[in-house]
Length: 191
Ligand SMILES: Cc1cc2nc3c(=O)[nH]c(=O)nc-3n(C[C@H](O)[C@H](O)[C@H](O)COP(=O)(O)O)c2cc1C
Image 1 (cartoon, helix red, strand yellow):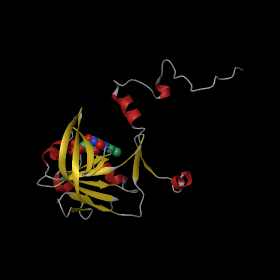
Image 2 (image 1 turned 180 degrees about the vertical axis):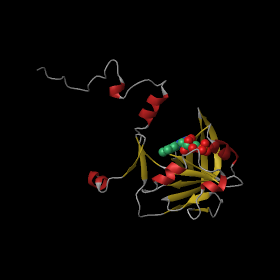
Image 3 (image 1 turned 60 degrees about the horizontal axis):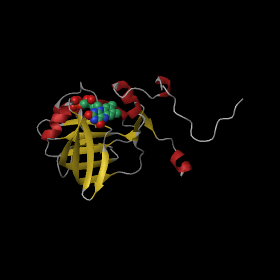
Image 4 (image 1 turned 120 degrees about the vertical axis):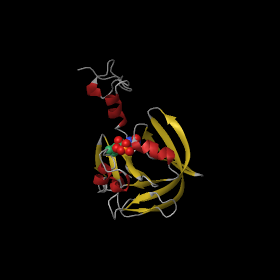
């Protein structure tokens, strides 16, 4: 048996599906690779005459001064048009146990307008009026800041005008196309 030389192992010459390294031109392969990046889950919302919410894991915090966040929205989503025209928008960060909320706001067959918001599960943001979901870990109320071309998505930056953080619960996570929960005690053990 020959010993492996010291140093990093070379990448295989022809990576195949078994390696998880494949073709950037194939959207399914891209989704699989992008999906390895673990995220939280948000519902982005806008009020006004045709209120709407959309599940989004592309949410990112951007800047403290000014306070900015972003979300990337598919140009083909109904929510894209809504956000393009919205005076304000809201972001609700979902907690563990809110998977059904995430699924609901990702379901294209959900009712239009106010009908998609179940009574008693939301309230208008005190500053912007954008719908904010009950039991969320945190809420951000935002004013549109800039929009950038992001290929088949648009990057919407928002300036945070108001926020609220609730303690005491873990975040809902999403990785490899599945909703996940934090394993209790693991983060502390690793620290
Ligand atoms: C976990 C998860 C995360 C998602 N993240 C995004 C996202 O960041 N941006 C996006 O445009 N769509 C995202 N989607 C898809 C939309 O939620 C879904 O297509 C929605 O129905 C589109 O909104 P619309 O009904 O207004 O067209 C996500 C779906 C799921 C299940």
